[in-house]
Length: 185
Ligand SMILES: CC(=O)SCCNC(=O)CCNC(=O)[C@H](O)C(C)(C)COP(=O)(O)OP(=O)(O)OC[C@H]1O[C@@H](n2cnc3c(N)ncnc32)[C@H](O)[C@@H]1OP(=O)(O)O
Image (cartoon, rainbow, N blue to C red):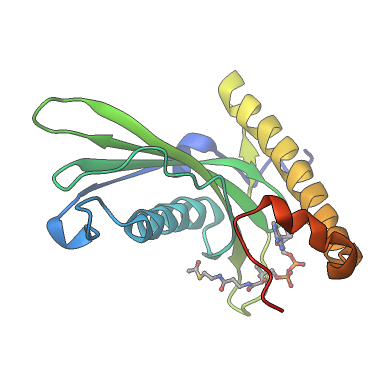
């Protein structure tokens, strides 16, 4: 932490996006499409990361998208985004999504996801982002958790790539007998 000039606080870029769930957002079952929520999450991740970076940002990876509870038409969805971690040109944005029934006031937490964004300069190349000033223990906890999350993700990607190269259909075909599929070749 040598360049003390170029740091921004977490609160500087914290962004909340609230949107009413209108009928055209619903699927055939009457619940809100997952794609609508993903699009809102991408939007708030962009707003939060671009504000911190002072630059245009692009989405690189999305982690932890599990829609645990359906969202209904008429509910107010709020997406709260904060910078959890910064690297050199990348940032991890944590997004907490809640849905509120305006009549009953009942609030449900639908998911928390993590978007990794990269800042781009005018030359369209990755550009360095300001460092992060951690003002609270909670800010520090999230930064530490993001480091762990990145390490686990890198290990998983390596393991996945290795397992693909090691996979032999001939030797592993017998495993399919426990699954609901039939071999037709
Ligand atoms: C508006 C929108 O969001 S559009 C959504 C679609 N997204 C895009 O168009 C992005 C397309 N992808 C790209 O442009 C490129 O892949 C980039 C800019 C994201 C990365 O380009 P690279 O040539 O790999 O750049 P480089 O190797 O310098 O990596 C840049 C940063 O991205 C990070 N990064 C690259 N790939 C990954 C990955 N799979 N997971 C996490 N971080 C990654 C690197 O760790 C590095 O971070 P750091 O500078 O903080 O250490």
